[in-house]
Picture 1 (spheres, rainbow, N blue to C red):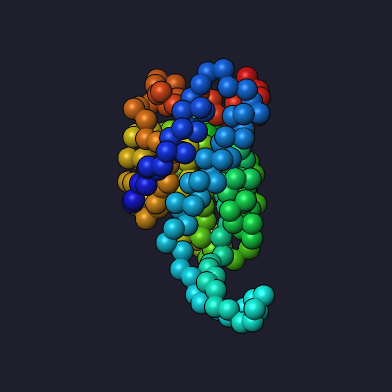
Picture 2: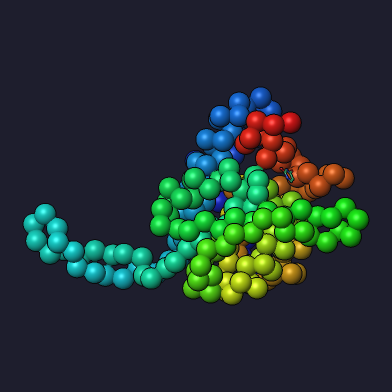
Length: 208
Ligand code: URA
């Protein structure tokens, strides 16, 4: 499993803004999408291109285009929706596969309450979106679900990850690469990332 921690001044600056306690909902939303856009740039850096000839203003011209890559973005409900527009700005042809999960408090088993995947999952690269990779439980279940649907190329894009979640993901799904703006210190006793961003879902949706 490779973990790419963004090393770009724009991403670092924007993440610093997201950490501010008093940031307004509309700004949190906008900046989350901006960081998602920049992380998508990193997460697609190794996509292969091919040369094709198109009709340019002065006649035929050779250009490069991405080679036969089908992508689905997979926002994990609900906070993952807060990164979706940014990613789709960069990959407008991507299909959206939505996954909603919660953990049953008695059995502790993950329950899927909403899953709607794109077609041809075996032919697509899946880019999972969630602002926070905390314990990793939901992410691990989402990866399992995508693999069951035939997906073999899976990457995750997160704003902030906790070392604990990364370790669990590595154990469960070592073939999944991760793109993050930062790896923070640790989880607190309630599973929140420190220093983190707080509850990213609440901040994106303006709830409490
Ligand atoms: N989910 C969040 O929104 N924040 C955290 O810190 C951890 C999980």
